[in-house]
Image (cartoon, rainbow, N blue to C red; front, top):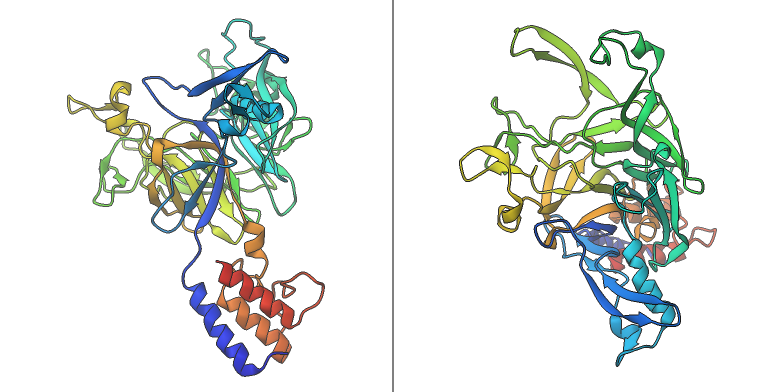
Length: 463
């Protein structure tokens, strides 16, 4: 056992390191980018493998890594990197397997959603059924990838029909029960009787209640069969653009919040009454599939009559994003902070005539129409802040925080963080027998002793 004076000195060192948090490393599946006046992917032709009758291309699709601290976001870099020189030298292919690995990133599309679970990425791409030669009954292409190497796993072309309803605002593994959930857009959904029998809901042009509808529902998904199971028959109609679950098993979505208004001195949107408007955080109960709501009173501008509706528990953030593929994630060690990869604006602004309207595609490079940013959302209050713009306007189909498990190792006091408080908790156990709420077996040798102190300092010093 170490001497008490040595422990005190080491504790002081640990606390000094706890003051400055290490950057958070976030990886994601590249979703789309914008290079000209239409959405397109860059590709570079490498060569032709005659023995396989295969042309090889290098594309921007792939896995990207960025580091985040309180005020900056590093430029996303491809990880793992794809280097032509690793498999093609002096006009010859030197590594066929690696060439095919690089070429497979052509298929890493997640325009209808993606999820990383147990180190396997599942991407869902919806195909344009109007394209020549596309079977309109099978529109969802599902592919699986190794989250570390980016290698394609299994079939490259496995398709599912439209009725599979695989388009989602996002999917996420729930670390509490090990199931994958998603906020899926369901079409031709059978509505429950309590809705069908209420004349205030869903009437068609003839005034008759419709038996089906389309909207979002929280579902579980079996990633082996790609079968979704709605938790509730109720549907939601917000412009949801993300779905993420924290380490406590709480599920959240962001709405896009595209809206008119004016920017305040902090760059956030406000309505005519000065209230924040735009994107809003929403929370869903995974047991029932229901959104957590509260009543709000509104006034009809035409009649002056007031009415009450159920709305999200959280206020608007003041940021306006777009109805397009976005993503969000949590670090396991901080369940209160959600990272959201959204757009910098709603795609609207004041045009050359001074009218608030859609910004033109032809000047998107200068008007910022497709610029993206990383936001930090406090899920306890719904408040958000824009950390920084993302270089080259990257968007991601899904994101996750890497090196999370190493960071959690050392959470002695069970608060979801690894810092000087864990040193205090570990010493309290070793010296005074005070049992902590977290795991004091830092070095994972099934015992608690001075070796765990050394392991804990190793974690703190490595940060």
